[in-house]
Amino acid sequence: MLSLLQDKFFVDALFIGIALGLSAALLSPYLVLNQQAMIADGLAHVSFTGIILGVLLADVSLFVAIPFVMAASLLIKYLATTKTMNGDAAIAIVSSVSFAIGLIIVKVSSGFNTSIESLLVGNIFTVTQAEIYLAFIILFIISIFILFNYRKLFLLTYDEDYAKFSKVKTKLLSYTTALLTAFFIVVGVRAIGTLLISALIIFPALISNQFSKSFKSTLMIGLVTSLFVIVFGIFIADPLNIPAGSTIVIIYAMILMISILFKTIKEKVSFK
Image (cartoon, rainbow, N blue to C red):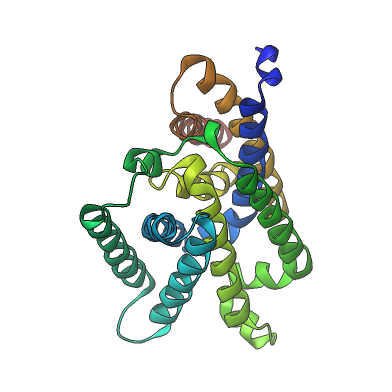
């Protein structure tokens, strides 16, 4: 199996997979524990249209898709702050309308020759060098953002009212987190797929929350779990010739089920 490391496409898949996995694990607690996990799923649907527009309008689709999805993330956050709808409704409206527009563009366009299936399920073994560089750039930006705003983000996640009382710029942090999530989603869509990319954000916090006793341990367990699942999933997917993104999500789901079962048994034994 180590002979796979001699293939450039496999090494590239590992690089972008690790960068995306760690980025998702860093974002995971702040979105999942703050009940904003669905924004990742919504932005994934928006990215479908963004990438389609990028393919039609430019040679490098990401440079069109990234600002498009970032604008959508800001729109979702804005709509969620109005009294006319809640956050889930804002996500549903923006994502469904964007996805519908994308499908219409594909249908009526004669210049679109990218496989729809590849956008929906992704292919981590066909990523470009530009996508790898962008994956590490977003990992670096997210890491710096969390490092310098760790306490503020912690307060925002668990007690937004107290964060406001402590003069934390909650709106700025919330909008910035949404923008970084949008950036991450667009970069990861071609590798993991529109239908699966949000799972990378949702699972780490859910799994680590079964074992952690503090926010810091939630973050660390999520990072370790994500690193393991990404690498293991890629090593399994390539020899079996199955989609790496799907394999990674299934491994995540299995670990989550085992974690919940382990926690339940542990609590029953402790209760007795």
